[in-house]
Length: 291
Image 1: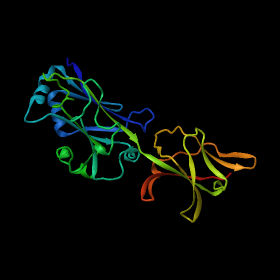
Image 2 (image 1 turned 120 degrees about the vertical axis):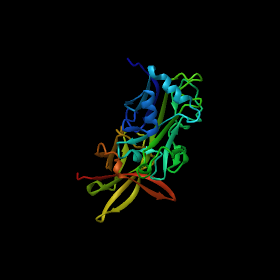
Image 3 (image 1 turned 180 degrees about the vertical axis):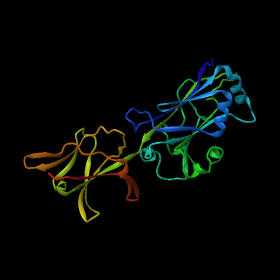
Image 4 (image 1 turned 30 degrees about the vertical axis):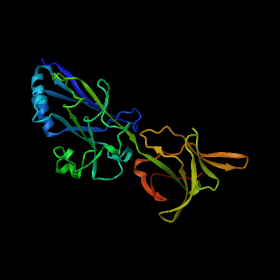
C-alpha cells in the first residue's frame, strides 16, 4: 500500500477576495514536469488556493535519481490560468501590456528555511516579477499557443538551491511556497443624471474614510448632461465591498439623503484617463433615478 508524504505546495493569496484565498486558478504542469511526476510516483492535489505535491515513499529512490542528475537539473514548472475572465482587470500589477508575463521562481530567495516561502521579493507580486514573453527563462515552458493566449503567470520550483525541497542527503524537506496579490486601485467617478443631477447634491462616506469632490459636468452619449463626482483617494477593487456611500442634498435647515447606499464599482466599467500627463485608472458608476 502506497504511503504519500508532503513534498511541497504552492498557495495564492489575493486581497481582492473577501477570504483572501485566490480560488479561480488552474495549475497546469508542463510536459517535462508531468513526465517526472509520472515516473517518480508523484501526486498532484488541487487545493482551494493552489496545489500540493506529494511523493510515494515506496518510490522515493526514483524521485531522488531525478534530483541527483547533475546533467539535467530538476524543475517543477506550472502554467497558471484563471477561469475568472477579469483576473487581469482586478489584479495588480497587470496594466494591459501583452508582451510580459509574471514569472515566479524559488531561486535567489533570501528567506530562511522553515518559513512559508514567498515566491517574490516584495510584499506583493509587483512589476519586478514580469519577464518578456520571449525570455530565455520561458523558452521550454511556453508553447506557440501560450504566446498568443498566455497564462496569467508561470511558476518554477527548482531543487538545487537553498530553498530546495531536498536536503544535502537528497531526503525530501517539505516546503510551502506562496504568492500574494493585491487588487488594482481605481479612482471612482459617479455620474449623476436626470433628477439626480441636483446643484446641491454631494456624495458622503458614512464611514468617513473616502472623500469625494465635484468634477463639474460631463456630456454623455445622446447629449445627456451629468454631474460628476470623483473620489480623492484610490479605492481597491474588491469582490465584496464594505463601503457605504450616500448621495445627499443640502437643503434649508440641514440636509437630506437622496440615496442611502450608492452602487459600487463594477469591473466592466474600468477605464483610464490622463490628467496633467498622469494616467489614472477610473471606475465609472452611473446614477439615473427619479425621486
